[in-house]
Image (cartoon, rainbow, N blue to C red; front, top):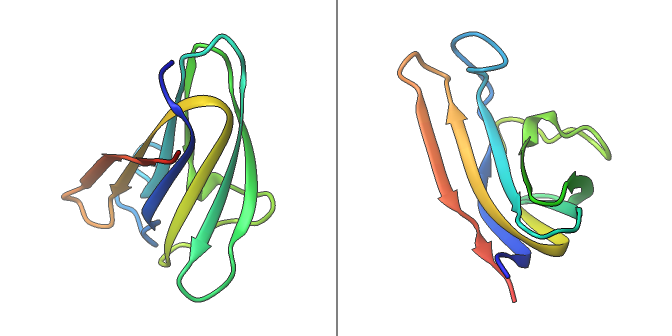
Length: 122
């Protein structure tokens, strides 16, 4: 079986500014999830900060045998994730998934893209 039930992304930061057309070039932080199982994945994402308690969980669904990319700066419920603050996240799924982390920093015209595999739990 491909994937794990728990993943951690210890690095997170949504830049406050952007250069270029939105939404394509808007600075963002993304969690990319692959569900290679034959069951829909119910995913809960909890976000942690350096100077206050965690928020979440943010509930997401990844259909069976599909991938979904979720931008942290589009999370609304239970509350938006602030820009310009360090954060980390824990992703928990009821079926095994694979998790990757991506950031687009377009604060200046010379854009930077960062991508890394998250740390699997269990």
